[in-house]
Image (cartoon, rainbow, N blue to C red):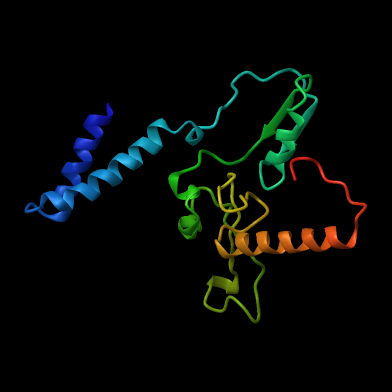
Length: 186
């Protein structure tokens, strides 16, 4: 199935959904959205992570989890070409929703969520089944302002506040302690 066939099918579906008497001006935004989606899904090299089928017999380092710190650690370790590094990640392929911060609310109870629930609460989660809230955690490294995996909830407010807090903490630490040394990446 080629891109032209897919775009044609998308236009036909949009025509059916929007009604038969569709104007040329109405079809243009639908066509643009369809082209953007299929371009993203089919041709974006970052959309499909490289999966190794052949594993080595031994590794110098095995990092479990590509969350907030896992990917950074692996990146730093692989700077030494002599080291063999294996990253184990539980999550599957990302979707276009994981790349758009405001759409992260749609990831709640999805295939990229571990679907954890809190313990029963006496003063919170009163409208929830068994008074237990959902505790959303990501299975894949999701591209939000600071990126999160297992360690942060996929809501736009949390990463932004965490980023602001981290910047303020780092600035305060630098001002108070001149003996701190930083790696060149930070």
